[in-house]
Length: 280
Image (cartoon, rainbow, N blue to C red; front, side, top):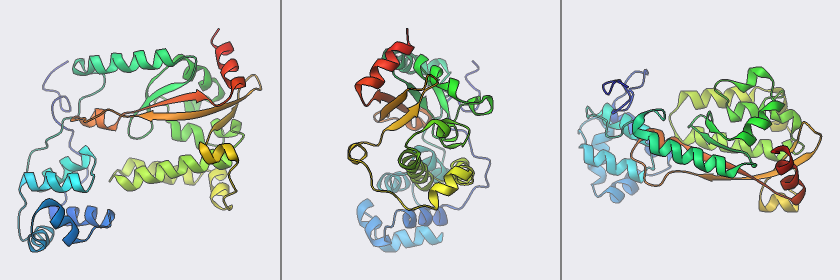
């Protein structure tokens, strides 16, 4: 791979017009529902100086922007945006997962997912696109029509589309609401047009629109502990699965910061037996 290829050592620049740092910072502060006084005290500057930064009267240092980014809990991609808006070089790289530099990470993920079989497991990017999947997940993909398989396979689209997993999800009321909440939370946490477009798309699905138009029902006892996904398999068996999610600790690269590993586990003995039988 050419080491000078854009995106290998430095973050890819967004195609959207660059914004001024002051208004962009003020928008993020307001999103996080923080006053100028609170943020100023958190980062150790005067409220007057922060006000001057937001109105464009003062140019913040790169260190101050990084400190404010930390206190605002900005994703690494958005931290780069702040730096670029102020005229500084981005600090965080965005290395493709296929890059030789991430070979060790990719191999570790593949081993983790393979070891999780016969239970489904996937590695997802920030848009819920599957970048790695194990054999159990590939078996479940048999429930999907070709137009939802991808590439890329998008788990939100595949799970909520009326022709996708939603058609086989026996507790779609609870599981669908859970997925919509996760998508809404991710959309609000980042300035990402693709996430906003995905949220708007799934909200337009007729089954999702009907779900949003109805009142939330009282959860069952099991759902009050963990919300399972109860999926009707191709063999007509009800598979009850709960999930865990894992992320990389202390990432300094955007790709790694945005990767999530989601592992599905059987919620009952019948599901465990069925998944093990399918793997034979």
